Image 1: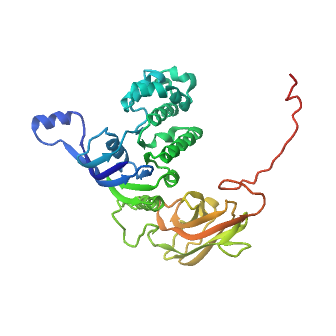
Image 2: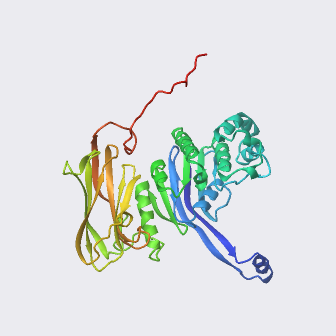
Image 3: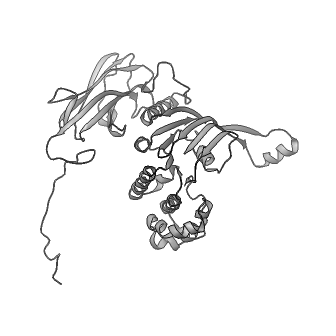
Length: 407
């Protein structure tokens, strides 16, 4: 459990090291203050996961260091229950001249494990890290992925009550990332609290119960992950317009709809070729239809769609620029259909639409409309399958003579 109230942290920044001495001797400031965090409050109950998102420099890593006790706050309170461990920066607390085995002892003691706990968990740590004989080699011979394997293995075997995870997992290979995320889910199911910092918005949506959006050290949004991620997408779009800080709501904008308004989306829907409705079968051809209005000539106009599942996970997205389709650019009302085979699993989905310049909405966003329409996949045409999408496989088999020999 973690409870944070009105947390604040400020750093003194100097242009060069000599300015520190000049400040002492001349008794006048040679620094400028950087407010890394200001009035940050949230709670993480036992058994829940909090995701923290925001652009680089928003204060995410500073917040984790405060929670872990690496830094002390200038103001506010942090209440925690039990042991806190985690991955802050890759390689933190390691001696790269020592072997992986020696670093298990050193790092384990550093994060609060007793020597008895380290001795008990040592083989489990080695097995989980999958480093094999490399565990006896110096860390300076390790790749970044190998260092991450060892760091995660030690931290999760420290049996913490709260686990902090920074972007360190991003350097691992796909197999080990999946292994780590499975272990994180198990840890949460056993009542552990997790604070996850990531730029992987799908991971935030899938793993987190609540999400905190930071911008310039301030809390912009706090709540249900998909809603907070939508605000983050708005924030990113606003950066391209020279307005990175979102305080409350910009004029005419909501959590799910924003843009310059030079072109606007009037209607969005999905229509099955056979059903004629928004409920279609998996494998049925369907049209994602956008009706939009252009207010002035826009020669670089791009229209796009994004399909998301019930968890808010991005399933598929495309746009006219990626498809090589030029849109009419003169003022007036227009319509475009994206025709595609709905080879996705049964369930409920949302359709997001956007009008922007270039290849994505990060350039100039004319209109972004999140969850503009709902549709459902009901039933499957052809062979049943599991997972999110159908890849239309074909099975082949043949005899392999001589493969099995008599003993």
